[in-house]
Length: 607
Image (cartoon, rainbow, N blue to C red; front, side, top):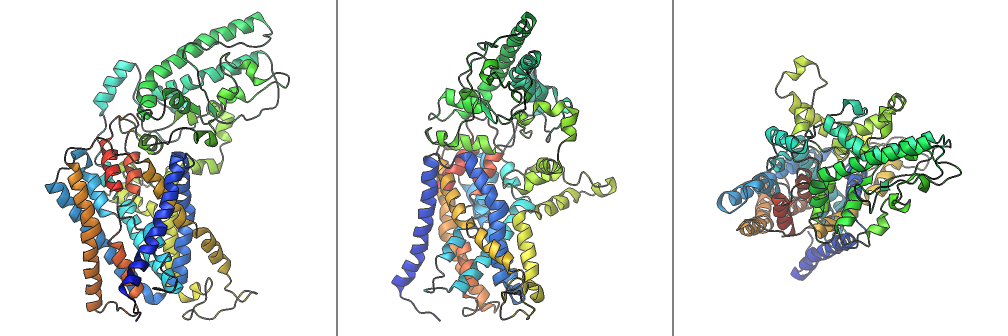
């Protein structure tokens, strides 16, 4: 047994924390510098979720877990349940006796229940496997144990619906309020629809937004068609209309061929102005203004960002070889104004904050309906030929299952209710059918699938021998390089998975860099401080007692299972999951000016 001094033990414990905070600090600075925007952060997060983490999980489990470790896997699962239950109990007691806003009753339970059980402990272990405390082999086994903990976390949060604790805090406007809004504005409330391929199937409200957004573009199509302009189609890319004002758009077509063409274009101009004026009156107060609650962004910049058009309609797909596109644009809009906001230009703007995070992650409107960006629908959608040309890949990309599996904060109660709709009626009549189907759906998440496959391979010796060679694997015929036949797959997962933890910590720093303490509920700081103390100071004591209980029960021993015991002990001391902020943002409507749930989450996570 290793004997070290107290000073060595303290330094060995503190040194990994220094590295972790340095990486988190890099992410913090990149967010403040505008390099890691909210959009970039979400993209990288999805890459980690769908590629990096599954590769890391598969590699570490296959290489370091064997059939004799089945008991250890069971102990980890039991320990995870105890950690979640203990955190839930402490959070409930805090909510019961200390001031907590009613709008965060479920959020505080989720904050106490679910720890950040992925990047932090892995980074900590990988800093202690240099031979001073643990060997590299023990460190890899510890990472595999952490991934089993992570799997239990994913099962509880996603498969078993733990996210419903967070979602239950939100109360949206009911149908009566929606009807009242429609009477005031003359529009219908948005409906919860999935990806639409035909505008005729959309609601009247959606068709109105769709038509308003693309009236200007369609008028340009008419102008170019009327002038008999024929040329090869070319794609221009995403647009950003900046500096325009409703009712002030005046098109100046160059060299109009006939008087009828000019009159027709002038008629379209008035329609453009009225359409844009209607759109701006309806959306500017609720959408653009709500994004502009941060004093760092002025109205013109946010208006420019809010009017970005992700896909260019047919109007800009045909350009004369003799004339530039500028000739067919409104007189006060140049081609440079229609170009997208470059990411490098975004760095000159003030840092993004919590309101921009809400705008990116929010999945609901003020009525609780799933948000759907109608500008993503191309004007070609009404073309029967375009509908037929939709590829199988595009169908997969638009599927609800893809949305659930490729992002970490897109699920809601409605996904549970709609699960199993394609099953026969006699199956759907059972009340547990949606829950079971939803559970199985979430098992298809890349990380979950990687863990399931890795455990199957690890527990079957002859199958494991195809990937790695250990003292307990049977001898089978090797590849020409005397390595297992599928060792290249282990090389791939090792190389890709190595980027998982650094990226995860950088994203953690970027998220913390956007948090801001707003106006807190009276006395809430007491509840937050007490819960942090219970999680970070009291729960570790329970962890040590639980490890001692495992040893005395004879389930493990200090000599052979020191890494397992260490992983269990540090798992009791982890802070709250960072995903809490993303889930809260996903259930927050962008129209909310004072998101009390986000304020509570921000303060709690910063503590």
